[in-house]
Image 1 (cartoon, rainbow, N blue to C red):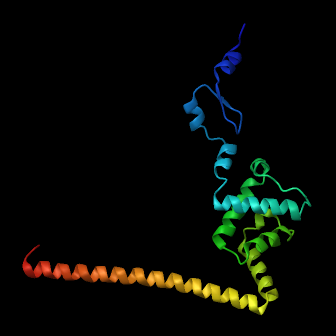
Image 2: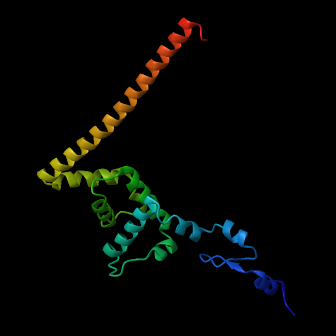
Image 3: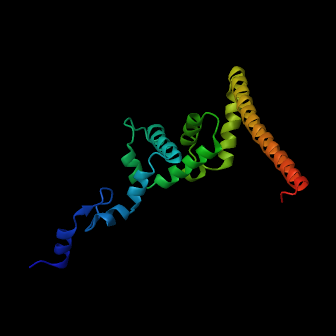
Length: 182
């Protein structure tokens, strides 16, 4: 005699490869969004890739692992959200030498939850600037100025184009008024 659970197992043809939950209809499986599936789908997002890199560096530098952690291990980690939050912080702040910053926080003996604090980055930046060679600092400063200038030029061109459009609209309105086209 079959029980209800046995019947359900027989009719469940579609199984989620991430959480092993079974569904009787393919459309339900496709609509299904479990936490492991969501994490796998986010794999290529910048904040996640940075968080994964920090996760790997943490296990190499702090735990002394010789073998790199896989993305599958990252997805299953209870620290996944904290590392992704840190990845967002790094992506938004754009620290000087991001790889060095990640190594700095990993080896700082500060809790993972505090890695996203501005004070942490300020401390890193101050130490980096004190240790940085004059030539490297000069090159970095010039690169920053050139990039800033490119952004300013683009903004200026956009503003000038808008100004020309505004002036043309004003001329058009004047012509309409003078010729009675309104």
